[in-house]
Amino acid sequence: MKELKFNGNKLVTGPGAIDYIKNLDGQRIFVVTGKSAMFKNGTIDHIKAVFTEQGKTCEVYSGIGGNPTTGEVLSGLAAMKAFDPDTVMAVGGGSAIDATKVMTLMCEYPELTLEDIRGGKAPAERKKLQFIAAPSTSGTASEVTRAAVITFTEENIKVGLKTTAFIPDIAILDGSLTLSMPKHVMVETGMDALTHAVESYINKNNDDFCKFMSKGAVEGLCAYLPLSYEKGDVENRQKVHNFQCLAGLAFQNSGLGMDHGIAHAFGGRFGTSHGLLNAVALPYVLKYNARDEAVKADLDELSRMIGADIIKTIEGFNAQFGVPKTFREMGISEEDFNAHYESLLDNSMKGSTARNPVPMTREEMDKVLKSIYYGDILF
Image (cartoon, rainbow, N blue to C red; front, side):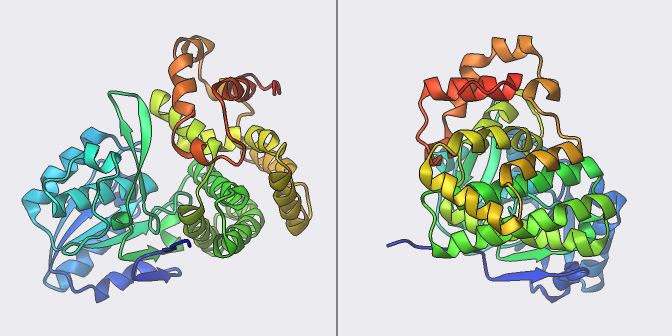
């Protein structure tokens, strides 16, 4: 028996969908966002104007970074508690949404600690606070998932905290919010989404529902990522926005693999873009995992579906989008790589690596990491 949950109460999609907030019944809305993007493109002003016209009280909390830390979560939590909202809205990238998930749950359950959540002791649902998520980037699918990735700074590692209570009640997929994404952000988030779709598809914890969705997400992202990159128009951005969400609906119920385990280890240590790490590592990870016959059959099926070899297609996207071929080309110095190697290796074995379709040993992970860093296949 397997219990599946795909999203909260409602998913609203399409250009202009942000105006769905006019239908909210909350009176005190605490809005959380990143550092500047949603201010510059006018989204925050628009949200504030909608709530003000309705006579509602709204406070905006900003400054969540690209890799939200435990400190940022606790600072935001203090501000949220002081405001005492009945509704919380996260608008911005996946990082802002992830941080807001944890803040909202801890606000509703004041006795809850980060270590409690990390240890699997989080409540399974919220009962008081209404939670809305409107992503401005197309990658994490945090608007529909039960995961929140937070950097525990004392350990220099990203940890995926999980509970169904993190799933927003309402997800708003408005492609117009993504128009302000610079190309490099579109690439990093888009390749993160493609990694979600592929890793979910080949995961052995998959099922009929998730497999169909992840396969559809691969097909859609392979078709529209290049168009979103080249044109940057709302139609293609909306398509990528929708398909990245579809990948999220799949992977939160099936799991991912060692690409994400590796990305969390290196991102936690170096603060590097999660999506970029995923993009660089993905071809190596898939080549390694293809030694498993079931994985090879899945990759062959994806190749037939898109009409081209899936691994070569991903390598082609990386070349087209200007993604480095190795972690060394990304700018991680050999000195830093070697100095922190043992902890990078240990941390790469954690998290999503536990669900990799090929069970990993430390010795095998050593070969994979050095292959990704130097660019030579050592496995």
